[in-house]
Image (cartoon, rainbow, N blue to C red):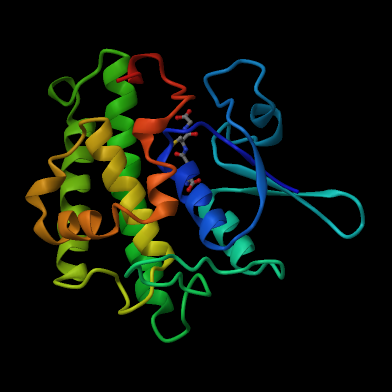
Length: 227
Ligand SMILES: N[C@@H](CCC(=O)N[C@@H](CS)C(=O)NCC(=O)O)C(=O)O
């Protein structure tokens, strides 16, 4: 059985939880995270980060996968996957992480989303430590980076509901996880970005996103996060 490590409010862990549901892959979780001194993930992952995934291998060993993008690539290749079919007008999940025709543009878009997400996580965690952008030009730049990346994504998405018509792909689910996190942690006025906000609303009822929304989190990892 696949085993996913990481807490409930992490937008990167949530990407993998959503993807596992979309791909119909059963899994178990260890939601203890980097804030728990003896959490197993800290000995598994030298980067001291979540998510991490362990998968059974044919030789009886366990395959370890670190970083959400690598985990996603691995999961899309799993032979046992059975793409979810949702009632209503939800677009079906994309069957692959990227399509060859659009791969490099989509890799760029995912990196741009990650840059926004990482910058805002930095701001969030440092604020818990009492450090704000007013005290640090570096943090001011992080905020500017997040802003610039989100505006780029808003323009790239345009008036569509998904990055590629009729398919709910990894970029779409990653975007929803990040925007929900930004709202949940009050990190960015997402509603000002009309296209991104519209896509978020469009997919809000999608079961994989509904079941994993940070408002339902049991393990929030960071103490001040329990809103
Ligand atoms: N590039 C990584 C980023 C993962 C990441 O930033 N995870 C955060 C939680 S959302 C973390 O574990 N942070 C640990 C720390 O800040 O010390 C991925 O895509 O998996």
